[in-house]
Image (cartoon, rainbow, N blue to C red; front, side, top):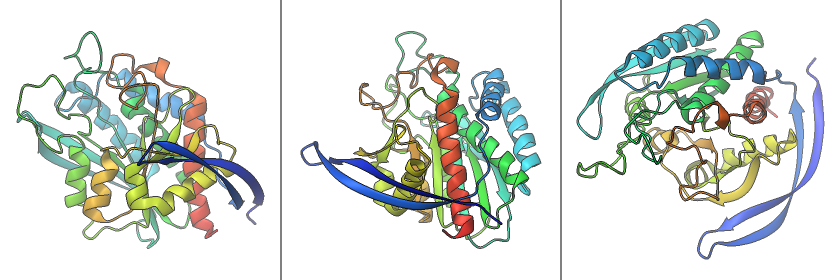
Length: 330
């Protein structure tokens, strides 16, 4: 018999008021029954993160990229019921043809009820937000590897404790080859997220559908704050509140904030706009930087110093709990 944990909490919710940037404080009362879920192992996730970094920057068309692809296919293929590698030649903003691979692992492929989980596994080819080495690729510990590491640990847990619902894990490629600020080429729209754009127009299964999706991007920084990001609010507000409520019920209030922040372009934008699958983005917001992202973003500081196992745990356990909540129909 499944154990049920009863949780009631009162949280103060801060919602950003977009027109005048004022903050409105309201009281939100949440009551939730938590279904039994596997325990997310942050040490295992961290080991998967370190393994990705051992290949070096995972920039498309490089040897490190291919080595990482081989590894990710092997590991995800070991955990998942079915592995599909979707290969594509994608044109970058400067005309470079990128040999890309979306790596897809599915669990319980025949189940009608499905959740889509995703992260990008490639890294930025240039440190265009750094003061030095602007044209050199970054290691991408948080911007790429953290989300993949969390999903690989989730995949391991799904194999050990299979849910009845279907889960699809997609590791998108060519997310971070977007046009840099120093480029002298004409501006190119939609130059980021090439792998997810391709998948959204050419899903691995014809007429693929999922109930909802969760994208993980930059989910490992110390004391990271995950907000209600605008694109997620616009397309998938119901699921945003569902996941955040679960995070708060688990005690991760300090990571998951109800503050609404500006919409960003990430893989979930194209999944939402093209496929119609409502997808949220769990992504760090940092109000202290000009970009709104962490201090490490698109710099050479995106290394292991940008990672805290406790953050990986908070995100991973929240996503795992969400899966098993859906599985129990709670």
